[in-house]
Image 1: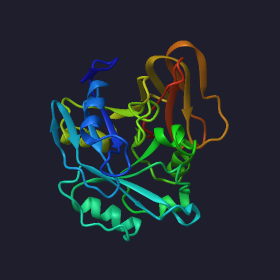
Image 2: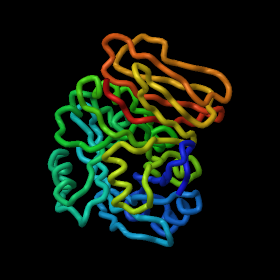
Image 3: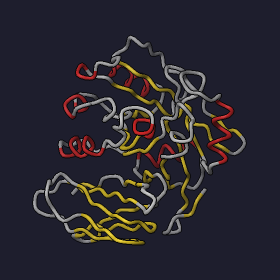
Image 4: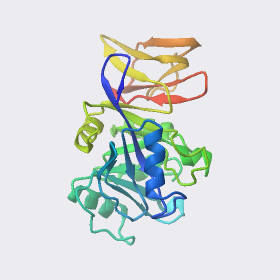
Length: 288
């Protein structure tokens, strides 16, 4: 548990992690010990088509989870990876199921259905908007940058779907597979909740009471007609929206705040920061 710059309790949570139960290089026990040693309060083991039970392991909350990948590798036809989290038991799903059946199956067992790495999968806004009841998506996916396609950041797709009316909670995850020092313990969410129970963390995600990060702390709020960022010391603060051109960037040393006044036509605002070490953090979206 952590205390943020506003005195609120935060839980450090990893929500997309693989083990030797599917295509990960480390055993579940080694993964748990590694993330526990890095200060995580909760993790989800999300092996491909292998349901992981929830529970508790030496003060580390284990969130139930699995990753259901459909569509093969031909991205123009639609490749979708759905991470199911917080399910009460294993859904009755099959690799031959289509993506909507997977989403519905996760929901049938009380879970959240997360659209994983849409940039890596080359999911277009048109593809995503056809899906019903997606609960969240990944704005950043570590392994997509460090080990695979260099399409780790899905910010452009997030902005496109939000401009069209789909405002999802934005997660940062590792999607750890290789455990070579560059794809694990990098990206996570900091959930605002009293405890590290799965129930409290799930509620924080649904209510967007968290920020996504690789290290920095960042908070976005609205004050009158302005949007304000408060953060740990960083070198860059950016505001993003559906508008292509506007003065939305602040650069310097040890920046801890910035303000932005929306312009005509803006539908939403989100923020992200980059610190002196090149690490980013992302807020959720506030609609206008």
